[in-house]
Length: 155
Image (tube, rainbow, N blue to C red; front, side, top):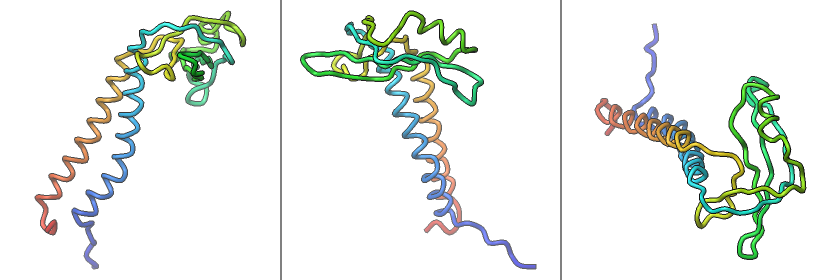
């Protein structure tokens, strides 16, 4: 019977890093953005360019969205803000009820970042959870590296 060939520890570390590092980077990026939106305190008046609700995860949840545009210091900023997940289409539609293209609404943006304009409330908890997920993935990669360093064949 032929002996089963095992992957070298270096290969295991490389594969884990290549798989998990992009995922960790994406979680960190979206987590930081969510924290920024949660801290939006500068008030502005925005024009609504579009509004609607969209299916998420093949129709199991719905999210309202609105496309906003506002001007700060002569610069025009446009952004699509997505609201919280809702249990049904009617609940999502209720959150954007009364919003029509061309309407003017009050909106907020983080200090010094007018391109991150928001209409819906954003949760700092969601941002913290995404950052914690990124840290967990980094710990898995570091743990794999530590495991591989102790295996024969690393040097």
